[in-house]
Image (cartoon, rainbow, N blue to C red; front, side, top):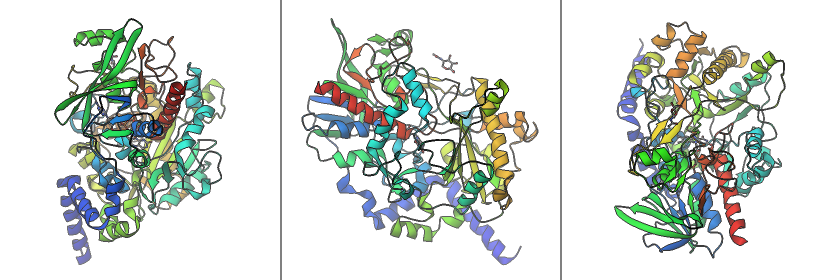
Length: 632
Ligand SMILES: Cc1cc2nc3c(=O)[nH]c(=O)nc-3n(C[C@H](O)[C@H](O)[C@H](O)COP(=O)(O)OP(=O)(O)OC[C@H]3O[C@@H](n4cnc5c(N)ncnc54)[C@H](O)[C@@H]3O)c2cc1C
Ligand SMILES: *[C@@H]1O[C@H](CO)[C@@H](O)[C@H](O)[C@H]1NC(C)=O
């Protein structure tokens, strides 16, 4: 070993100790100090909404949850100066660190996260600590849009047409597109004249300002395989694209930044943080059941507020069904078993849970310095570039620089003799110059809660080796999970059954996706140029099954069962004729007056893409429905 090598090795050991064993918190303190000192603009103290401490007893609208949907609703409803609007949020203000794209995963498992753990099943998430999946959810203004990976994707035309076909008039793609456009502020120049985009809205869309050098080759490999590089939010979805992201001037554009900050000075609008809603106040009258207001707890003091017009629940797909059930709306038997007074027997509350599970951890080693090897990229210089110009390696989320939508149903169709190209991809790939090995465990391993055993078997021997990663995301799972109460205590986490792989077809689709990815990553000239090869260090329990066999892939899928953080559909929209429907096509809870649910839970079926943009669309459309209803 020569001198530079010794130096390099000791540097890596030092880096490793600092990063892995002192965990991500050290980074957070470091960046926090840097921001305090050099970037007061990121604090934006004067742009942030103030916390209300004095409440009216009555508001026109009480919105529960200040996440992606709640921020949109608060803005749109308070546009009418006649309406008094209150937004209640369990968490606090947006964390300043969330502005930095590269730190997206660092805020998981902090006080900005609800820290959910679905139940142990023994056949999924086996690579994680305690074999338990982790489901982070944002807690604070902006909700999950503060923790998310910033990817902006609308889903597929057919997703929405299917919602409409299930008895939900108004929700076809052509009818929802105007609501995507309503809030859009597209700043990627190429899309300036596209009829699928507009600029000037609240939610800014950009590309990441930094990309790892391998990105052009990731796209070239796709072209080689015959795929188009296209606007996957445009006329057709199938193909590859550089990711579109909710960013403004290179830093995160959360729903709170986009929608709450501009509304903060409206005199008819109150925001209350650290306000945990315990239940909806329900009343049985001769004409029917009515939601009258909510009870919430702010810093240990219980408050009651009433809604003259409506209570709107936007607490996200886990907390929304929880609040409904705590308030007596849900499956009768379940409510009775916990001694909760029933107001409306709706068996669909908490059911129909759908998530995008993916195969995580797929690692392809390369020979050239073209990826996000952290000790090489996250240097003093990188921090300086960020501080001075909002650019450099801190301005990417390297795990998803490129995304693809591909249709692996083709082989199914070929067997049935009905092959048609109907542009309804069933697999999404998240591709980027990032893998679990390149960060020494600082970001990925910590956030995912990967077990040390799995990490050391698979990644330790290739630590800090250049590599790119590919997540294969199951876009339309057949499996269903559910959410039930653990107890009648509003502070106890509900029971989450993720339901992953309860339908075998989901495993098969992911196996097919793994085969596709092997071809893409190792057999295209563009990536072979870099010597791309599948990480030879596989988990022994899977390796004995024979690398690249179906059994091997199933083993990997059941170990590294990575959520893409899209739990949805737990209070589905549908007509009264559907016994599992919770809200109607105007998002009003069936059988209850003055109560709507507006967030990710109302999707009847999960969309074929990331869920933040669809939730913002749902809230835009919901706000319009409310305005129309009350202006009659
Ligand atoms: C780690 C992560 C990465 C993701 N990556 C992406 C991505 O790259 N692209 C994408 O499109 N989507 C992504 N998503 C998903 C996307 O962000 C969510 O689907 C979307 O934000 C959900 O919006 P929502 O309004 O339904 O819920 P949320 O945004 O979760 O908002 C719910 C709000 O309600 C509050 N609340 C809950 N219970 C109560 C209560 N009892 N009282 C008061 N307030 C309450 C919560 O604190 C929260 O602020 C990601 C999500 C996560 C967690
Ligand atoms: C919830 O989902 C799991 C997994 O799909 C299933 O086994 C269980 O029976 C469901 N429970 C309820 C109450 O629906």
